[in-house]
Image (tube, rainbow, N blue to C red; front, side, top):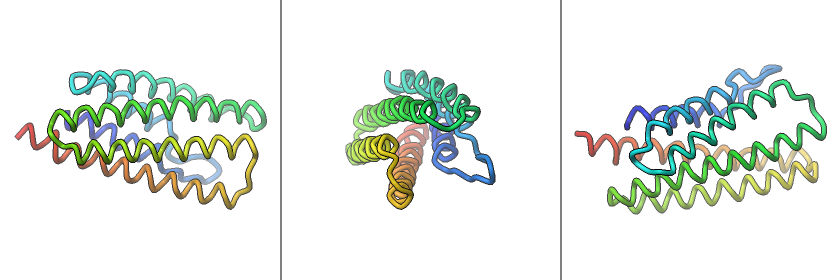
Length: 171
């Protein structure tokens, strides 16, 4: 189980980091593949993880399409669909973590997971509104910073679950 959480951890790191030099050096689809594989192996821990895996595989496809998709209206539509599926994936992932940590008596980690999934959803909704309204770059930069902070907090939570819940149980 620890290795599976490790895959999810690194997958989210790859998804959250955008290094661009004309193109994305760390394409998101690789991160989604890692999340999908990691979550598919966590089915015994929570029924939410296999569903998360399925949504991550959908994100692999959407991410690949976005690489070849030209800008414009279709690109915005793809962004909105991707944002919706991504939100579902993160909601289910963190719901699985909530179930796992509550069963293991770590309500503190469950509360953190609930807090970060709510923050993630709020940022995603604001981002979708910004895309629809074509909001300026300063507000987009602030939103990107908020997104990065929340993703870092989620990744750190997954790291803590791996160390304090999963690996502690296996010792």
